[in-house]
Image (cartoon, rainbow, N blue to C red; front, side):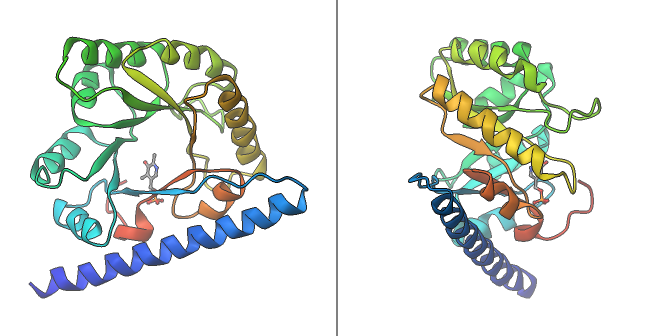
Amino acid sequence: MTVKKFNMINIKNNIDKIKAQIQQACQENVRLTADAGSANIPSPVTLLAVSKTKPAELIEQAHLAGQNDFGENYLQEAIDKITQLAHLPQLTWHFIGPIQSNKTKQIAHNFSWVHSIDRERIALRLNQHLTEDGSHNTPLNVCLQVNISNEASKSGVAIKDVFTLAEIVNNCDKLTLRGLMAVPEKNADKACYQEMQILFAQLKKTYPSVDTLSLGMSSDLEQAIAHGSTMVRIGTAIFGERVKN
Ligand SMILES: *Cc1c(COP(=O)(O)O)cnc(C)c1O
């Protein structure tokens, strides 16, 4: 199909473009850090391709372009695609959407990473499922989603509760606490990013397993990398606009 071929070229181009943008932002960041008199070299930034609402064929095309980490928000849709793409064991699936507690079993059994842990009940349930199913690859890598904009409507743990939840996750033997995730509002000011950077640094000091700041999307990846992001979640800039979000 000609459509497919056209898409393949686009997706590869888009991934190459994003990677160049990430690299540029990292270099810029090294410069900033050096100017501030610090010898810190920022960790390399991982590209997570957010494939929600996009078909398995496009994920496969991204994989052919060298992409192996994929993020999904909607459980049933994700499981359909994970099943369709089971012939590609190199793919690593990240759950990044809001979590209902009756969905934790399927999440635990289908994903290697969960970025959106925001309450104790979810962490304990995931750990419980993984404990009951001895055959599953564990531990599960988790990030705590922080409600950085402090809006009642957004998911995420309040900043003041981050360390309490971190301690709970750290005590779950089937979960590995990898770090923090946030979805800043559109045009959020710099203070949001700075706050995440500070929280991440504090968490890292407390827990040696912490190495991931999941921050930055198509429209704010530079800002995120400038504030120490180690994983950017990019959907639109790779796969194009979505009809629903
Ligand atoms: C949809 C989504 C993204 C990707 O957003 P884009 O603007 O399309 O890059 C990243 N993170 C989360 C949590 C999302 O829901």
